[in-house]
Length: 426
Image 1 (tube, rainbow, N blue to C red):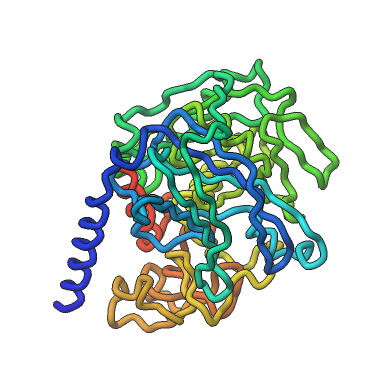
Image 2 (cartoon, rainbow, N blue to C red):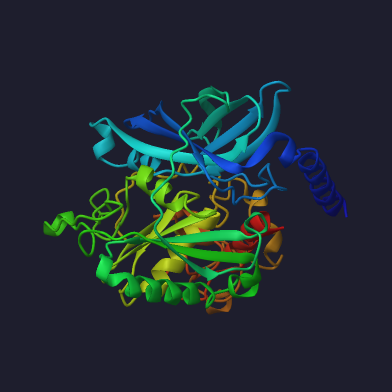
């Protein structure tokens, strides 16, 4: 009874705090985009200001302005300068933070172009960026004072590309808004892109909990023609002229498909209201990638297309971790086993209470034996996950975040996804 009271009190306090932040008092219905470069090498991070830019639409919630989640490597806090009130925050991951865990980052300095968005402020604000260290502590890494009347805030109108309204369930501020971007489709392949997006939209609703929440989701697509079909495959000396400069062999892993061109990605996506960006790449090669609140990316015509899309979208939407531990990756020491990881679907058991412990039957042993068939469909804590065979635990023996399966999110992953959909749609 005490635990229930604490949970209810937390919800009431969160609701009260959010209710005190009036969107119309502090913000317009546009977006302010903060572009910056993150640079350094292993265990270092320096932020270099690039641009502030106005985007036409704000698709995010106008009610939930303070996140109830504790996700993401990075967090942005926005304060009203006059009152020092926290009026908005958001969390996200970046490609740079993955790169710093690779072998190359031990000897080479690099910068990655990054971008984060917020509702456009009416008055002067203070932007603060925070980043988690290895102990999961949030350290302030950058501060920027912003005057919304500053004439250097760019207000350029983007080239208008062809937009498809795939699924329209109403007001973007009360829906999860997904936008698909065309990569590696030539102007002659415009119909193929439209057909591919419709197929991928159906993939989304083949899986729970998306199928049950279809009415809370909007889907749009933007066609931008590339000069050439496909994408770069550096390991095979294949180079293509495409809009978003995507490429396989990210960090030397042949299946890892990404783009470092966040400037172009954001510019094109800004033509519509969006909460999550999906980049659809016109190739049949296996691969993809997903970065929380950054983008997800996948290929159009591979036989595993549906699985890769849903898996990578799980990363992008809800900060779900990879639960596999036998596939080759370029990361080194990605998780500190003495610290509870931030992702909702893995645990080191350091602070299992903060994860899904309350969802586990009291008769299920923790850790849960993986070699006994009686636990095949039971929620527990099974060793192996987050690229590591020992010391990290996942909720079930199998899940879409572990293996190439469809409509197979475990209850913990489903719960995390549903919470994110509710955050954007309530």
